[in-house]
Length: 468
Image (cartoon, rainbow, N blue to C red; front, side, top):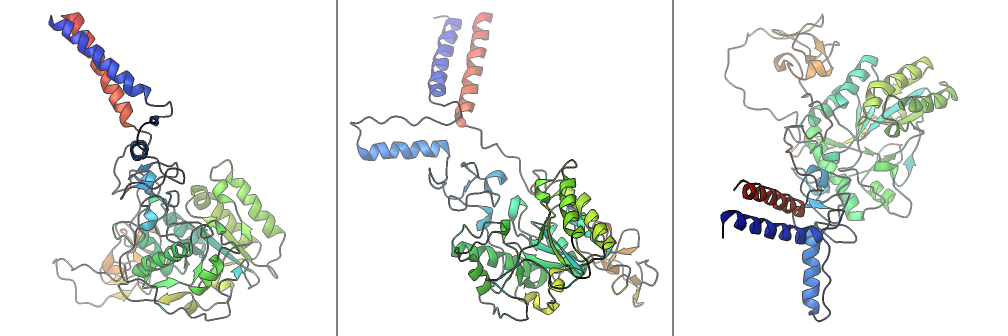
């Protein structure tokens, strides 16, 4: 047999093998389950069905759980990529999701949770403020890459706000991870006079999970915030504002010592996150404020610092409009006349992202002259921003301030407070964010790879045969 004849026969055999594999794959990329023969033992038929499901990598209510260590994505595929594992989309009952990760440090479960003050705790929900002339701006789902810009904006307007913080949603990583920028942003919220509250660990719907999962969502976020601040909040907002009667949600949150905060102005900003649509959210806000009177009314507003148009467009409009109509921006705790000592529960065990100090490196000796508080806004050398009214951070240009540019890259630790690291130019779950890896799409299949290889072999063999 000549070499070119052998190659042609080999190519035909490979092509036949490819067609067999191809025929067993349905158009949507799934592998067709073989039809068991009636004379096969029942055990063998069940084993074949299980093998087929594993090959298909499907999961969820119809297919069951993923193999150990893998996540069940919102579309029902098993895998280990961010797209599979990021909560709340990841199906928590059918695989390992980000929601199941646990922050380091002692649990907070046994911390005493007395109900102090006049503001009601769960099961009662709070939907409005009680101090006339105030407006409480609240922002859910952060911190994200836009939060630093929002803090800059609030600094310029001297406007306190309340941040309902999530711990690990949307693949952003744990908020207390020292290699990520989120802990520094949360610290900055506190030093800038804002209120930090809980929005659960991974943004699960508290009306749909069981009581153990509901408690897990709250306690894990407590530990992460405790690791950053040395305390955790007594205020929370349920994700999707969902805490339905009969689910046990409101009672469980009350037992954990939480005030359940809703709102009376919903900006719908999450629906309008584009330059063409954000005016709809502005119109909603304007209609409410124009219908009220700052002498008698107060407002509790919900928005989200996870959306660009909210941070770079809507918020400044709301600040300007509310000021023009005579409203004073405050935190939720202040708009309810709740003393600040009641906003958090102290837990110093394992606490303090900001209290962790690395051993100083040896360097040139510093001047023995005592530092003085800056009197003109300049800093460095023997002048510190701490204690000045120009801001707490000494930026790279030797100017005091509280903005991202002052407290982030180039901040001088010897002359003030340094809190944050600027996130990369992408969402909190951006694939280019440090620490993430390039991954395959869950649509990839082994059958497709086999088919491509077989077709390539066939073409090459025919070319060689013709050349011979």
